[in-house]
Image: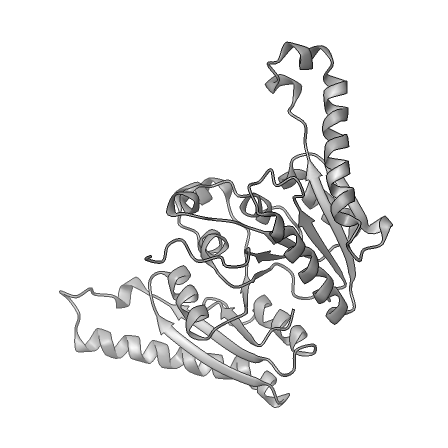
Length: 311
């Protein structure tokens, strides 16, 4: 992956820890010719009187806040600039963080978006329009969600779906594998390949013939997935002992696998074809995000277009 324009989302609520920036500083060693943009979006309801109540005092207070944010970004950018890197900064006022990030990604033609992700309460996730979920659904460029910035990326894993049961196009698996291999080569990291499958639980099987021979059914499911995984992985430049066929629900099996093997970057695909799709909670990438103990790189199929954009 030859990144040229990297957009780094800065958290205005944290003056100390900026994991996305720390990760960008590490990546800068491998992409010294890239352009880095530090982007910050801030909003304070106390300074938003609305159209009917806007006053010169409020406008002045907002301008003062944004000036502080610009100075903050310049401070954060200084170490990168001292290394001779091309660094830009942009601070904006806005209520919808996700839309402002997506607009900035388009404006700066970002081919990689770096954002710190925090723990998400699964109940709140159903009630709130959370920025990370919106970016997973709508971001057209690769989205790198940073969980830990203190570690070096030395183990990359592509999570594929060779039977396309998650409704992902076949070409996406090839893209995930190619990008994982490319990153691993650039970062001098190990590369793994994983596929997760799960037979229907006994309690959800209503076919009498399957119930009578559930073990045979489960064995056939494994054989089918193993054959598809083997066929795909035959052309992958991955050592045999780093190809992993996992049994279980992805949101459970993959976090356990990542923790056990020391993977620190999981490369995944995500698809959202319509506004209806984008409204649904349940994409594998979303369900995994809370529990996987490593960074996640979310990649869309070639030609993906944000479904929320007007036709």
